[in-house]
Amino acid sequence: MSKINLKDLFRLIKNNIIFVLAFTIICTGIGYAFSHYVMKKTFSATTSIVVTTKTATSATSDEDQYQEMLRSNRLLRQTKEDLKLSTSVGQLINDVSIHGNKEDVDKSTSHTYWLTVGGDDAAQCRKTANYLSIHLQKQLLTLRNVESVKSYGHNQTSLMQTAPHYKKITLTWGIAGLLISLLIVVFAWLYDRSFKRSSEITEALDLPVLGIIPTEESAAVVDAKRKDSQK
Image (cartoon, rainbow, N blue to C red; front, side):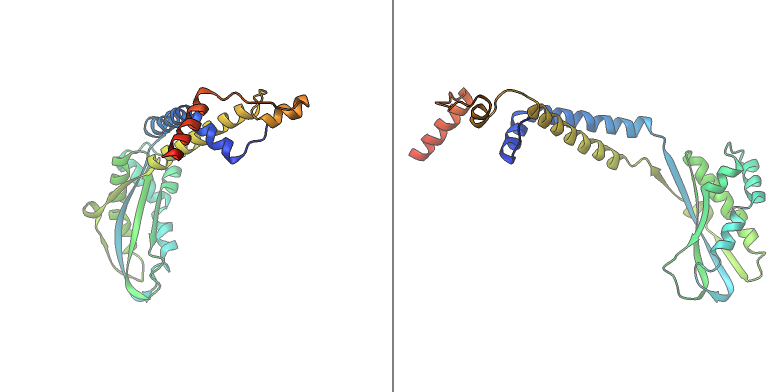
């Protein structure tokens, strides 16, 4: 097996540039098609709830309690029945969450919480988030320390696609295609048993090299360099 140096590598890339580019473009296209037409899309709908308490608290002090109320079987079962969701209650528990701003450490009587619903149906996620924000508001008002709750509902429910990440997947496939094509070129060169350097002939046959016949391409390069030096 021959050893490859940096000069050989650049020459190989130059000589096989069409194959490398074609293979990279094909892999990039596969990644694009796979992410757009094969991978399952998931979405996340988020709405905000402003909770005002009677005593000053931090933004995350009551988060666990609110989370438990949101994920209660009673509320989620009612949500499933009223909205006629195909999703199970167990799956809803994993898809819904509520959290406050963790950077808000100052104690205050009013904090904003974000209620998030995930799933593979965009319209259903938005509808579920709006429904839960309204019904959670009623339950939060039953807490002793809660003075008021404001739910924005339909007015401020944002929807975003969480997966797949088209650019990331397409770029990953493109880079993988480039690396694989380079590996194919390098290994094909390494496992080619033909002589590539005069030193290999000397080592293999134990005979001196008396002369080298240049290829048409290499001769043209040498001729061009000679003409440039004469100018």
